[in-house]
Structures are given as C-alpha cells and as structure tokens.
Picture 1 (tube, rainbow, N blue to C red):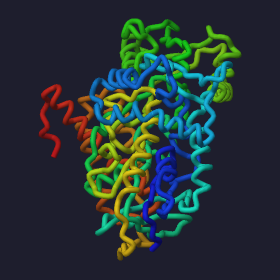
Picture 2: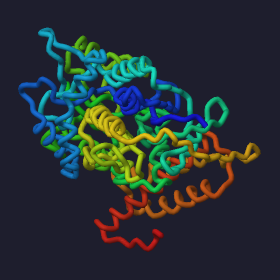
Picture 3: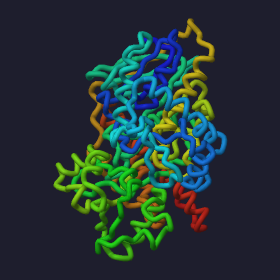
Length: 496
C-alpha cells in the first residue's frame, strides 16, 4: 500500500490549485483519470469572472449579478467569499504566468457575458481554461512533494479509521493507496446525457463515491443547459459557442431567421443562461422547429477572428464561417450547480473528505451559474480546502490494513446500460423536467443501479463509470420528483 498525506482525485483547475496550495512538507498524490489535459477546465472558453484592480466594479456588484442569475438561492456566506477573494486567486494566476488579454494601454481586457452588469471577465482569447490549466500543470510539475499519475482510474474508496484507502486501476493493474485526507475534484456529470459540452471523463465518479460513503449530496437536479452549443446533431460531445460571443453582440435567431429574445426577456441575448435556454424551448414549441442560430455576422470579420480564434477555427472545420454564416445552435447539458455538499473550507459531511470544483456544492451558484464563475469557484475553494488541510493534524503512525478483492474471471457488465441511462435522462429531465416521464425514468434508473450494485461484474473503467452514472441519475431524478411533487402536488407513492 502506497502512503500519502493527501490524495487529490482529479486534475482540472480545482485539483491542480489544491496541490499548489498544500504545504510543501506534505506528501501529495494527484490522480488524473485520463490524459492530463482531458478535463472540463481545459474546455472553458469565456474566462474567469472577478473584481481585480477594477475601479468601475465592486465585489458587491459581482455578488448582485451572481444572486440574480442564481434565482436568489445562492448561499450568502460562500458567495461573499467567492466575490471578495477573487482578487487573491486572479493575482495568483498572473503570478504563475497566466496570460490574460490586454488592451493597447496595457490594462487587462475585461469582457462582458450574459448576466453580468460590468465588464469583469478576464480571458485569454476564447481558450482561457486551456491557458490556466497548462500554467497550473507547469507549477505542479515543479513541486517535489507532489506525485502526478495520469490515466489512473479510481475504482473504489473506503473510509477507515484515521483516513481513506483507495483502489486505483492503472495500465490494467490495481494499486492500493492510503491517505489521511482526500480531495475530490472529479468534475461534472455531463455524460449522463446524450448531448453535453463536457469531456468524456465527466461521469460523476466523485459524487457517486462520496454518496456511497454517506456524504451529503445537495441540489444534484440543479443542472445548467447552455443555450448555445453548436448543433451539428452528429456528436455526443457538443462544441460550445461561448457566452462571450453574445457578450460581444451576437444575435439569436429562430427557424425563420428572426430575433426572438425580446419576446421573453428585456435583457435580450444577454439574459442568464437558464433564461435563454428556456426561451429557446418555448420558441421551439411556438414555431414547431428546433432550428436556431447564433449570428455575429454584423461585426467586423477581423475582430471576430482575433477575439474568437478557437471557435472560428473549429466552426470552419465543420463547414461554417462565423464571420459570414448563421451557425446552428441548441441547448445541451453544460454544468452542475449541485454536488457534494461542503462548508466554507470545502469539507464534506464525511470528516477528512473535501470536494472542490464542479463536483462540489458550495452554494455560490444558486439554481443557475453566472457565466465564468466556475473557474473562479474552483480556484477560490480549492485554495481554501488546501489551507484548511494545512492546519489539520497529521498522524505519522497512520498505516491502515485493507484489501480490495477483484475476481479476474468476473463477467463484464451488460452492454447498453450507459446508452439507456442517457436516453432516460434526455427524455425526462432536459432543460425543463417532463413530469410525466420522471416516475418511469426514476424506476428504470433505480433498477439499473441495483443491478450494477448487486452484480459481481469486472471492475473496469466501463463498469465504474456506468455505476457512477446510474447513481447520479438516480439522485437527480429522485430529487426532481420531490420538487415536482411539492410544486404540483402530485403523488409520491410511486417512489420508495
């Protein structure tokens, strides 16, 4: 058994930031599920929101916008922390060499996105997440106290007296690790849907592991559907057309090529994401068509190419010129506001288990995340988690005895399970829940979950992810039924 003081599961912005902020006298392991750049943080286009040397802005204004976007369900304490400590973590990124775009006068270029009342989005063109991740990776690589293992799958985690024991699959071999503190930074749950902007590893593993250890999970049904995913109708992973495109003046058009947002919200295309997604669904019902477009052709072509080089290039490969064409879009799953419920220091209800980033529920997003607050949350609360761990007691005699058993002859899980789960979720809980489909969907998912848990299947990547997706879908639909029952006074007798 390989022993560490702290094990971080996940290597996106939250996991890397936690490693950087942990004390140098702690022995730390970072487990990266896939390739080191395969994470949702790396895909983040728009930027990171925050008030940093901004004379015409304030944390209070940032907080107000966050509350409005979140339906005023935001936690006031953690949201205060988010907006007031933004300057600390943006300054840290700059210190680490992250290059944010600047204006001709040398000041940082802050852009505007939906739901924001001020230009406060720091960005690196339209590939901000990638820029942040590679600079954080470079910093972690220099740390002698941190080991980094990519393509390593967490198969199981057990809470033992004084810490945790982890079962990890690497290159076809199972290895056991132990630690006194675990930090889950496993990202989102996008792959529980047929169409998502999330990367292939976003299967909710950390949430499922925490749930099975008894951790409190909160608001898992608070799922954000981004209104402007590129709608090529061919791939499960949908390319995102950033919020910043609308922030720079793009229009949304329906199947008749007409603008329509004025019929639904006075903020037009700059309304928060949930409002725009709901508006598109209402407009689709009104027109009888799912054909929608984003249009920025009225802007200078060189400005578009320079401001959105990645989006422009990717769309060009797909046969669309952002400077001259209306680009097809439609909402798809994008982000999770709920997750492993944590306190102001990112600690869960299980002692010693922390959660940061998208897999956590800090309460800062309310029922709908304000654009570009995700990277900020990941950095602020992973730093706080590390600082809290740094102050805790470490027992040098910690040396648990635990063995994970694997049956080499166990059968593989049945095929089609993940496809079935995605189909259920897409039908019963997309943008707006289908109350009539919730009960049937929940019961089907419950059967799948129980089958996977009872069965003696081979513990490999396919099984671990399917089990996590079933667990996540089960929690989401159960919570959605409870909400629907409360709101519409429908019976709960079908749920046991």
